[in-house]
Length: 366
Ligand code: NAD
Image 1 (spheres, rainbow, N blue to C red):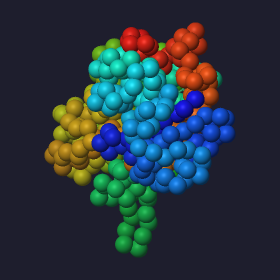
Image 2: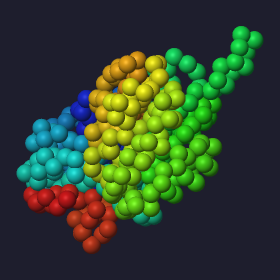
Image 3: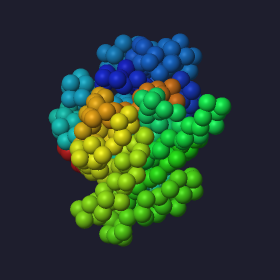
Image 4: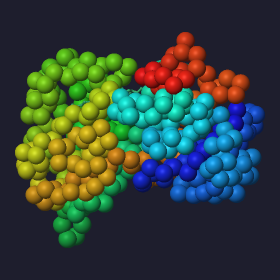
């Protein structure tokens, strides 16, 4: 297969879809890699490293003219898609439920699109799971970003000048990002409390040394494929009441709550921000899906009554070296599992192909 990589153009995107070590693995398996000049620079990978790995470093036009399959990171824009040749396949983040216009653009361009974000959460596909690899890094970085914006430190410090008490951190959502945020905040010495509405997260949260905030009625939450699918409004109201005391005392709040590909639940209202301490910080990691705080703005920092609200839609991209290394491994695992002779399989009898193939021969599938 001839696999292409372009320089990412989405604002703020610093990752690259394949790194040199993974290019070497792919070329050793008989694939050819064509990569746009400078595509890996923002992530710390020079053109020479790709050439040493056997890749052809060339212009964007030459990449698009040569390849069968494009490996991509950010959701491609309709303008990018318009440049793709018909018959090509692209493997990328797509978030088809949130981006029907992107899916339609892929269909119009007769490009077969594969959404890596839709890889099913089955054992065979774990090595391809970009949501896990990238959200894990993002959860770590959310704590670092939040700590940096606070006017206080995380750990207990007993000094001759007096004692500094540990920071209080509240985390909404104990999925991949939330669990890493808990572990990172604990390592820095904070006291951590957590709210999630999947009952099984209690044990996971406690195993990391954090406190789980209990809400009655969680048995009413519907979970499908590991994702929260439906929550009754009364449960969210009960949750809001249960968390309010902790929110009012928190120094740092990190929100990671998502529901199955759709709009994120608003868990912190404007009234609740007004209850928070001056100098406290919210890092909202769900702004891509609308945000968990009513006041957060994607990729911007706003202040409300002395509370700093940081909207972070793409924290993984702020650690682009590690993020690209892991993304590229996910990509290579996907290619290994789905490659046919010259392109990616379109056999929808395969569970992984069926779950990820959003457009096929000009038709929208997902
Ligand atoms: P996610 O990104 O969809 O959501 C993040 C968290 O937000 C989840 O824990 C969810 O329960 C929580 N949430 C939703 N509504 C909430 C609310 N109102 N208040 C508080 N929290 C709320 O989830 P994720 O990180 O992708 O993980 C989802 C599940 O999938 C987890 O059980 C995870 O361990 C599992 N998983 C499985 C695999 C695999 O088997 N291959 C891989 C990765 C993750």
